[in-house]
Length: 511
Ligand code: HEM
Image 1 (cartoon, protein in one colour):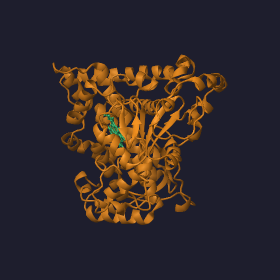
Image 2 (image 1 turned 45 degrees about the vertical axis):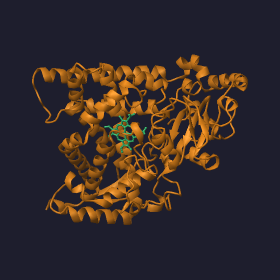
Image 3 (image 1 turned 135 degrees about the horizontal axis):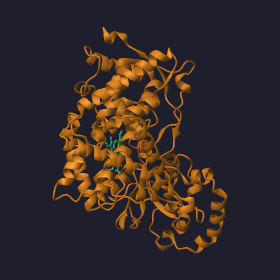
């Protein structure tokens, strides 16, 4: 989540902005706020007028919020500009929000960018009938267990392409480290584009176009616009805010999605069927024809955009961190390679079926998601009515951030929480399905990630093949202790430095 601090310091309009801030300081002193009206609100750190607690939030908000919550408790208020946010930082409080009061917190706050870019979508859309209908389509027609199984061949094919790319780059680089972040990003991007639009995206130049648009999406959706945090400055949105950028970006998406949809319509009319399986565009177009369907073309495009935005970064980031942890912990890498190579003896590639027989691999992925959740603050929620949690009044309309990064490090749930120790998941019932609130990398409740099973299967198969087919080394001169594990802030949290590794292809699997 791009911080306002970034917004202020990066913006060319910084001076104008600060001048306006000073003028409004006086105004906000007199402005009524939640804390003066209600004494039962959760505690909050001391705040400055107008900017609230913004200056206490560093470039990695989940880490700053974790430090504040250790002082002010697992349910605290933080003022980001004029807007109060409820920060949830323990498994108990997460359970209260996402199970006990699941319905109360089932909606999402709208931001300037999501309002423009994702009008009619599901992931950032308000809770209600349209969301329910889209969610049903998503879980029964697009990402059901049956469908996920049917995407097996496509997933294996895309992993095959990635393996070939690593092999080629390893050959050409002649023992020099290659940029694995780039390769993993392309893989995650290709698999989501293929899932959503079939092979269309591979047409001339389209792959790069999709990639650029998705990257821009994540950047825009992860940034706060001025009026998101300072509603009293809404009049300055046009000059300082994100709305202009979001509108331009939306036009580019519309053009591309119209083209994808038109091509799918024509293909149906001509009776062509290039892909063995229907892709998401095909499914959504069929459903739209249903007389009972209230799915507008905006909803179809919104759902397609959701898949691109929610599926690409998360998958790539999870793979990037898992590989980084394995290189940092060579004993764990050896143990994992032993497990995979023992089961998979005959094949050139690990198959989806074989992955189900690899408990240590699954433990490694869970441990990586615990320490490095791709979405450390999940996606924001908003309360639809007032409620009472732990003796505190939670007002209607308040925005909520569940800090899973902090929950994954809670000492009451996790022994030596900062250590990468996959063994903790062996023989443990703790899973990410949304019922164990100490482990919710995919969220929980009615807004839980509908791509969880698809995402997890992709991670498992990709990782199994990466470590089955290759041995991996750090760049020459880098020791495991020096290996950079810093995070970079955004809607999702990737590695700050690109993951550069030396892959050594195991020629024995060709024999
Ligand atoms: C490692 C992979 C992934 C992770 C860690 C992840 C994580 C998340 C999280 C934390 C949320 C918010 C849940 C909440 O508010 O409780 C979410 C929502 C969502 N995710 Fe994922 N996700 C992943 C992969 C995917 C994939 C592959 C897709 C689609 C193909 C997807 C589609 C969505 C959608 C559409 C939502 C919004 C759901 C709603 O608001 O009803 N995700 N995801």
